[in-house]
Length: 112
Length: 110
Image (cartoon, rainbow over all chains, first blue to last red; front, side):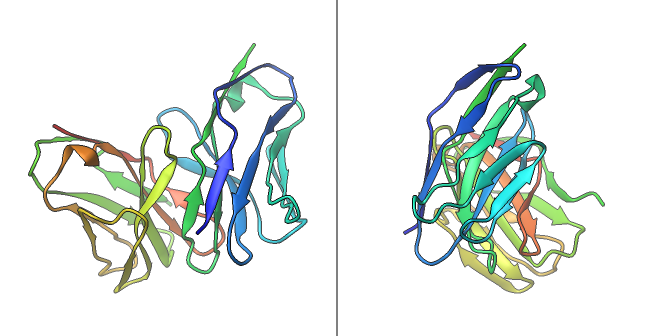
């Protein structure tokens, strides 16, 4: 079956640091890959997505590239801000029925 | 647009009680689903629907029922609550390009 493994947290960085959150997956077929973000007390918001190999998803300075050869979809940002503090979830799914498989989430805290 | 709305925001039940978690969306999305979020386990799919009148089980369906009589509404029913159902429940909807999540219902079963 499908599964998603993402790096354990929590992750604490200083403002303006470079961010990488690792995500690897196992899946049958050709799933789409997603990163969702959850701010305190809120539901999940779609941050970015990629629907096929070598696609790069990007939004709000975050980006991730769908790497089929390494089955990875690592999230990166060049310069994080305090407002990026949240829990980040990697997920895979099929756009045809939107059944998503989530990773366990990585809590990110940015300190000024 | 209100997006995806969920009620109630918080709920405390006693073991054996029943209740319905409400979910509604005003975006005319065909796909709707229910997830539960537990510490260290990410989100797990309970039930989902690809359109009015069509529902199917997800990864953890036991103890939950759903129905989809309209495009807008997708209620989740707990028939006999158990402490293992203590969790945060999220409803989500989509047109097939990424899910929109509601704000969640925090449920505690004593």
